[in-house]
Length: 100
Image (cartoon, rainbow, N blue to C red; front, side):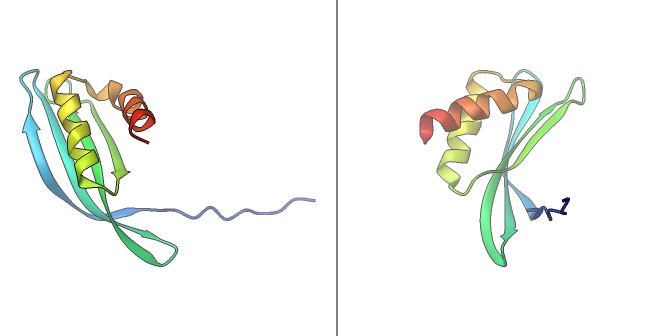
């Protein structure tokens, strides 16, 4: 027997830039603030965006953390290690593995 499973989509809305830093490697690092609607409740969440100004490559984690201190600490780590957009997800996994 087959059934249909409804996947609930969690979408971050009303994104605003909380912090933006231009790195010396021509990469822009942003901490974004947004609203996440989940199961009828609203949460403030913080995301991370990395944009390479040379190649135009861009990666985004829209709901990285609900804690601003974690998001800013992660952005500072990205800046100090001169992380490129393609490295964002692996670094996020490393950071969250250690911080949890």
